[in-house]
Amino acid sequence: MLYVVVEELVPEYSQGKHSNIGTVGFALGFALMMVLDVVLS
Image (cartoon, rainbow, N blue to C red):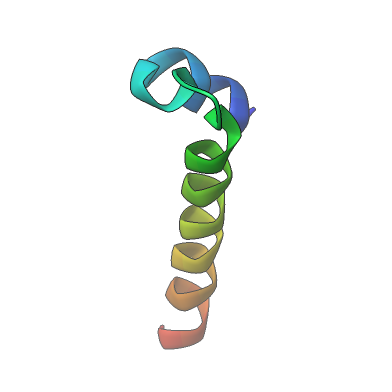
């Protein structure tokens, strides 16, 4: 679900040759943010 939202709402991520790098980076950043939220609270 996160992949679809990023691909559709942030068109800059889906342009160019390596379009999945930005999407995967966003997903990893989001997962890291969730882990840090649980660990630090």
